[in-house]
Image (cartoon, rainbow, N blue to C red; front, side, top):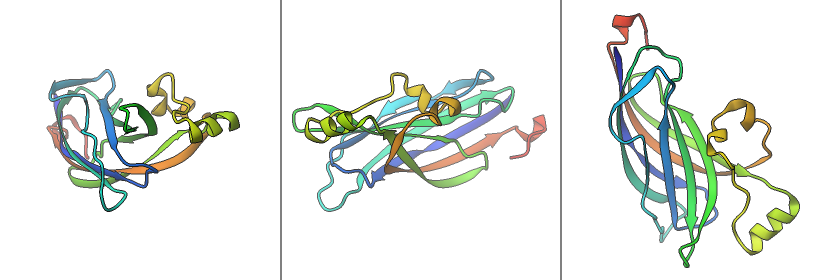
Length: 175
């Protein structure tokens, strides 16, 4: 079977309206893929930047997959959250990207978005906090559902990933 190692880190985030940010993440793959080792999901610590609007997490990602086919190539799903002084959390953005298919080290900037909501929801979000969220976060990656959503741009999540494919050429796949 062909294998894929993904080793790297979620470096941080920039461009979000607040501080005290953390990121929930997960790697999802199709049915032909089997996770051999590593954690398929996790959460970073909360970072409170002092000087600029960049949150640094340096959270490691280390997963090892085996596959029988290319369908369902792994995707990385991201959710950026804000934690206020009372410990309440508020969603700041969703992001999704495919793990690069080319071997080597990749520096990636993943733009994020969040549901826009109606005018009363936006007004309430401004004064009370909170805001609309997806009932099913998997819809953030599903193309048909995602394109029907009304969204607004959020910040950017920065990643550094090393991709190591193994035995793909043996099975007739060129990366």
